[in-house]
Length: 67
Image 1 (cartoon, rainbow, N blue to C red):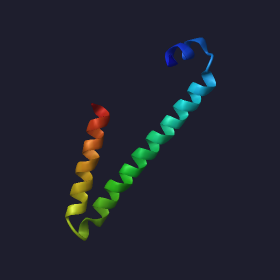
Image 2: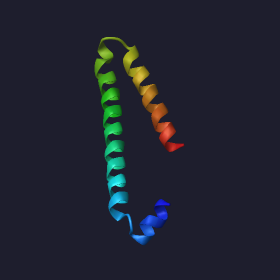
Image 3: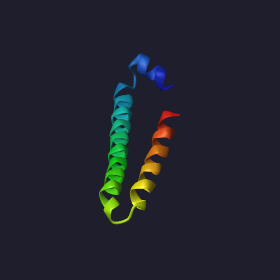
Image 4: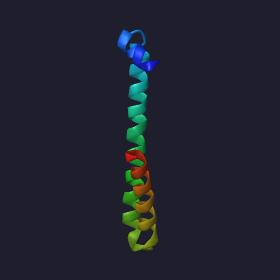
């Protein structure tokens, strides 16, 4: 459905809008995950558990994106 619309250029504005919104959402998710991991490393001096937990969660999310 979407591929046909892209080929026929009927819904170019809508598909462009969906692409931009999805890209912005993806960048926001990556930024939030980076902040979680960075803050985990930053607070590593208080207790050694936070960075390990955040790193494992980050790796799980990356593995889901790759697979």
